[in-house]
Length: 90
Image 1 (cartoon, helix red, strand yellow):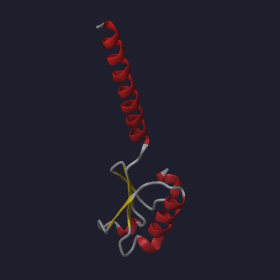
Image 2 (cartoon, rainbow, N blue to C red; image 1 turned 30 degrees about the vertical axis):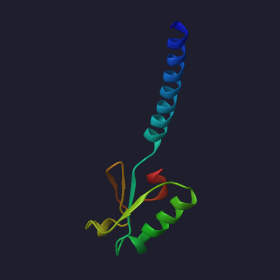
Image 3 (spheres, helix red, strand yellow; image 1 turned 90 degrees about the vertical axis):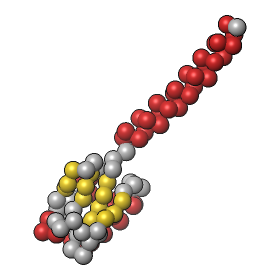
Image 4 (tube, rainbow, N blue to C red; image 1 turned 135 degrees about the vertical axis):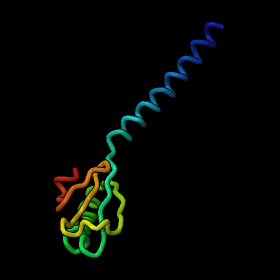
């Protein structure tokens, strides 16, 4: 019975390590959203998207949220970055 418990604990520990590794990876990944609306896209939104693609950074895009005066607009972890640059995002 003791050997079975030891085996069970080893399997449980292995699953924990996999879960912990996945959680640490996910916690380091930022949620990035880039506006590609009619004003943000030509004022740098598309350039930001291209730069992040080249760096293999995951992001999503959205249409206008009426912040055109501050184009390009990016949300990082639900916080707005106005007149954003790649350095502001990463």
